[in-house]
Image (cartoon, one colour):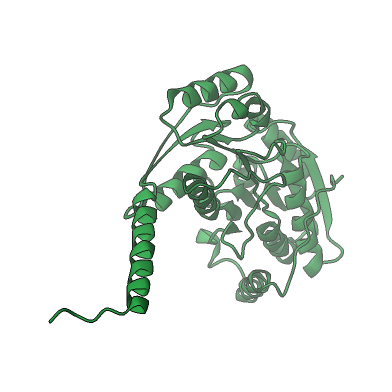
Length: 339
């Protein structure tokens, strides 16, 4: 006997078939390959660059079952050389995302309209809010810098702490202000020395500035540069930023304010997938950054200093870190230049 199929059952069955067919098309359309070209502003051994490559490796493993993620990167490029490289990558048709890891909005502004199906990404300060198919990432290290400031305030014997910066840029000033706020939160009478070397990578000049600050009484220095020899030579405690650099000066570096690009990459991949599914690009006009609670930043382990630091101080910092992550303590973003 043939089964008795009612009209209602037939309609439901038809709707189900259409739904399943749509889902099948959706799954089939899910992109399985993503290739990224990265224009670097600094050498690959510099923390700003190396942390991105490390994070891409982790995301590649995380998404291995659903996405074939690959990338290649350049030596440091600027100005016309960077523009030419971006254009060549775009014209090749091989890359889904062109990632300018630094200040590249000026170059992308000249090119992005010619390549509307390519996603452009820029990272850091000095960029411009182009929108459309340019996405702007940022890094705010003010939260871990506040914690390092607390550690400086609790451990300084002279009551003077130092900071050697690169430029008085927005994303440098926020770290400095938060570091000083953290120090003052545990020692209101703290004094500070601040100077900028006017370079992203002049280690000799960074050493000169650090030596001057140490000579004027600073016995804890936040080095926003990559030279820690003065800290080792004077046997004082220092901090680094961007990446965990303890191995470069294990007897001097107590911790670092570190960045993590994994949440940034996940967000970029998701935005790219939306476009591949048919949505227009909607590049952000305001720079997007991920907080400590979102996994975008943290402080590095104490390494050799773990046994040297007072347990009460470590517990205080751990407790404050949890308050920041939970939202119970909000560290303001203050980009004013510190004198």
